[in-house]
Image (cartoon, rainbow, N blue to C red; front, side, top):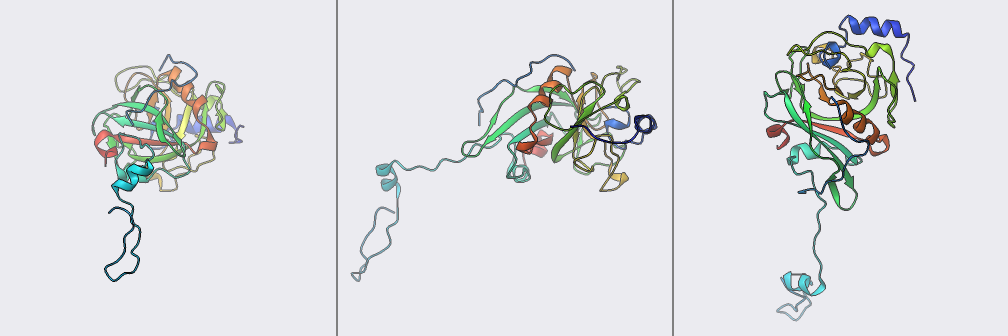
Length: 272
């Protein structure tokens, strides 16, 4: 599936003019990896009685009864690094989660792990930890245009695109020259190829549209253009970035039928 997003020349001109506000798409968004995520184990009174007046009391199961019947309560596994507040924000129908954990509130380095949810057994990791970059100044729960911080939260992943051909994702994929990026990053690294593949993070955007759509439901001052994209070897303006091989792996793994979400923030924020 591809988008009908209008003439490519217009999109390219808007991109070059910096109209993808607030995120990597305004000027900033890595290599190696297999095509299938590697599975990793997650290191996630008595019986009835008669009343004193001769009537029958209720049968209340106790520890002894549980031992005799072998009954036990089995709780589905949770994603271990997430606290109750963060877990509550993951939709019940979601069966895929991309968990991006920043090293610290002001750090631009993070770790990304893929998780899948079984209806009975709960969440389990299906990838090794992958190194990632986030925004230059770290994280925020009140993202603003140009603050150079990545937004904290739980956001849907519904749309993809890039300069290069679709590597085999099940997400709608918009390919075109408007995803071309030049220049250098914060550490002098070349930005070329950063948008070869991208997944739009549904922060302040309209789901179901190309990542190049500049609609900002929360207003332009709240930023936007927050993507997962190819890493250029340094911090981003607001996005999350992965090495090229891992980016391709992510795209092939994401399944819109499993309502994938990205859970992102620094380790202390996600632990709440």
